[in-house]
Length: 208
Image 1 (cartoon, rainbow, N blue to C red):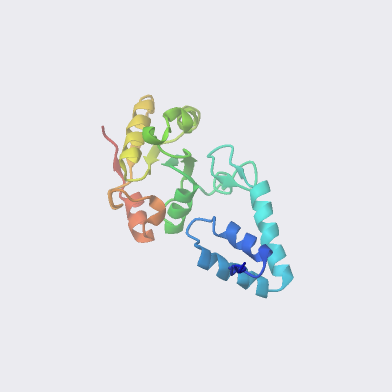
Image 2 (cartoon, one colour):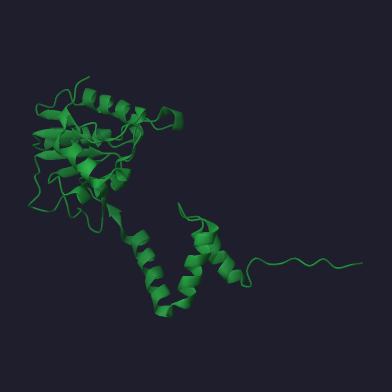
């Protein structure tokens, strides 16, 4: 009986497992995963150990800010604890990536509230799954003069905007939304810094 021979893609099971894990990352295909793994394999051992320890520290020690729910190394994030920030100006965003995108523009000096997503009934995300109640509580307890709704220019983002606006009927300050410089359907993290910065600066009063 003739024996069948199978060619292994990798000569090392350890390498293959590393590639498998790297390929699970968003935007990383197997070719890129292999290139990254081989790069690390060719580096000094301490380089890989430092990377691995950094990832473990990030996963084990990063927490959510108790005030705005952005990622933080401490109980309160570096934005909320910065005395130079304008605490009367609150920007409501869907997630932490939006905070990073807005901060890169250098056009906003207020503070944030991270909802943790947007209302999306199709995917089972209701208002109760978001930090809308916490936002309402902050609008009562903290002395904001303006709340900016900076959510994605999508149906889900618009739905969330309207829901929040309804829940903020008691708020005596101004409720605004970022200008429509952001293309419909775009997430803030993918907008270029100039466009996003102008959208923040040229915000408009939010109306039903």
